Image 1: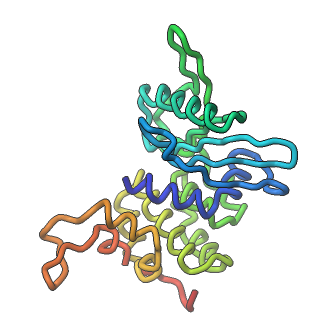
Image 2 (image 1 turned 135 degrees about the horizontal axis):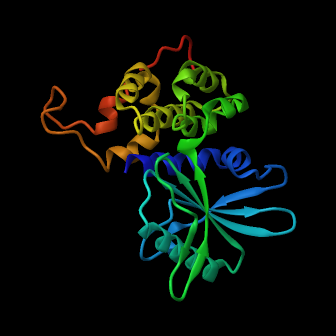
Length: 242
């Protein structure tokens, strides 16, 4: 659940940079508009976006997956058909896959249907190949890459010196800390403690806290159960103000 909520928020605030870096779609003369996922009655895509250029419109369906299972391919085909039917535009399905060990082939086929989709193997990429962009919006995804631990301080500085508002900075820092937890839970916990004072400004935590709560023994002094992410997202080692 935490990956879904944070991932969708990161795509909302950073779709242009994410498309530019990982999908090689230039942001010049491109309009990216979130689409309602509610049109999928059986399930929902994590972050459907309409990509509009000067000469055509394409619906890109972005799905974030921590780990792969073969049944997901059929669900993606259902997503494709739903959006194709509604918007009557070209539809491309993209999966951002966290787990480096998963090995989907980007293809589904049965006795009646053949369907292709693109896999971005985030967990197999090298952090050093992406950190030089210095785009704060892509940093949580860099946290999922190989050797990303080397760049923790640099990522923090990129966020701190960016022109994002304090709430977007807090969401990005939250994404970095949480996504690090996919491969290294200890490091994720350390970052949440280090950056807690800034993360508490994250609007996305209001959504997360409605979904996940800590056990009853981890309560506030008044006895009320604290939302999980309100409890763990507590401070940072930066100097100065937002």
